[in-house]
Amino acid sequence: MDPAALSRLSAGRRVVLVSGTNGKTTTSHMLAAALGCLGPVAHNASGSNMADGAVAALAERPDARWAVLEVDELHLASVARRCSPTAIVLLNLTRDQLDRAAEVRRTAASIGAALAGLPDTTVFANADDPMTVWAAEHAAGPVTWVAAGAEWRADSLTCPRCGRLLVEAAAHWSCGCGLARPAPSWWLDGELACRAESCTPLSLGLPGGVNRANALMALAAAELESVPPGQAAAAIGQLSQVAGRYAAVTRGRHTLRLLLAKNPAGWAATLSMLSPARPLVVAVNAREADGRDTSWLWDVDFGALGERPLVASGDHAADVGVRLSYADLAHHTDTDPLAALEWLPAGDVDVVANYTAFYALQQQLGAGR
Amino acid sequence: MTTDSSITIGLLLPDVLGTYSDSGNATVLAQRLRWRGIAAEVLRCTASQAPPTGCDIYLLGGGEDTAQLFAASWLRSHRALCQAMDRGGVTLAVCAGLQILGHTMADSAGRESPGVGLLDVITRPRRRRAIGNIVTECFLPGVGQLCGFENHRGATTLGRDARPLGQVVSGVGNGSRPFGQQATEGALSDRIIGTYLHGPVLARNPALADHILTRATGAELPPLELPDQTALRDTYL
Image (cartoon, rainbow over all chains, first blue to last red):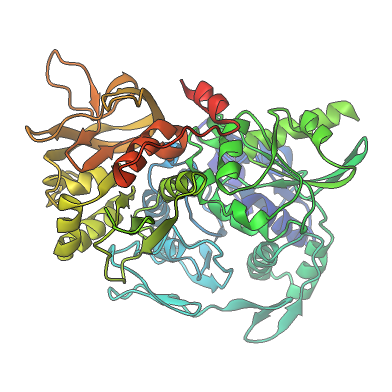
């Protein structure tokens, strides 16, 4: 790839980057829908989120004045330096693929260093996540703090700046060194997305509190581009699936709802979306794009699933199966998620898969239709 | 060992040293006792609490550099806990936990800082991070091969009072091989088992879990068959 391609293709456009550990794909789809009110938007909709994916998306839509680019958090620093974005949306930074990233704090530091060199970029950052706040406080440009929540805080109980234990009081957190939760300009009040001036009702087709938080982020970033929150919320409310995630697919006697979760934070958000007692397939791979280390399964609160028909699946079905056994959950084990359906009663089935397991399953389902 | 029949497992600093899902080791130990009809209690001891000193088993996990420094100074400030680990119970220390229990350790920038000194090891930074699946032949009798995932930048050197936990079959391990010798992994003293293997290590290696439980209970434990366990080990060995 031509190393100058990204800066050349970005020139003269308003580019917004969306990054973080979880919610990148969904939030970028929401923001692209909102900016679509203004005109054509270049968007790496498939989730191809490294520099080549950004280049391809920009090259495909030379007519688009706006671009929404989902960027892998490990590549954010280099992509941001090359495309001089109008804005960066930073959702959260938690543990994912430590075999690739080594330390969450190191990822946050590299992002902070990049933001320090971008005085013309507005940063929309999650005020509830200490690691994200620490990265964003390095920004040379303006920062808009968004209270997008942090259901998973286990990776940032100590201060990312100084290493001391953070002091927690309700939603507020702080450290003796001065790092503390900034006062947010945007927050959620139930189904309302609020800022000082007004509140906007959200009516989402996507499930879960985490998607309300993603919508809040998208609304804030869209407002910078002069899309009124009400108009943005209406566009976002049209989404019922995102790159196949949340989609319902009928296969024989089952209707599958496909969910993607690939780390403890993602699973914490996903657990709250699962219907009680509905049969569940958990499919886990550990290929390069997933991270080779399956340890994170032990930080998922599988005990919260309770009794339900359950199948451990994917390349690493045995890791999942052992994990479920230690949570006292009876289950079947089958590495092929579609073959695994044989074990489940007819009707609705939730399927939660991590990255390559999800895309392998999508292909299998496509081939079978 | 406690006088009553219940086994107490002290999970130390799960809020600070939990990067590699190390609390899974506590789950594995407690369940393997309960399934055999032995009562087990897991005490989660977070940084703001006074640590327990009467546990049968202590567990320390892994963490990032800043968390590791915090954990080391926390442990040094709780002398009674260190004495309890030195004189009673069995301790499993994984990754950063292993380094913290040594004499000195160093962060990735090479800054040296003191450990707790319960294990006769020192740790210096490696040039490259050791990341990947690892298999070792364990020196503890009856335990056999160990598999796990390592992710560390430490090169750990054993002193005279520490023995390695195993010999490396594949992977890096302690990463400080004396010239002409076999690569080793982990460190053992009378009461402490230190290792770089997470995964968590006891879920992947039930024989090591049962070795710890046999020492803690003083009893012969009947074998346990778990579905998927054989397939899990076949995945990695």
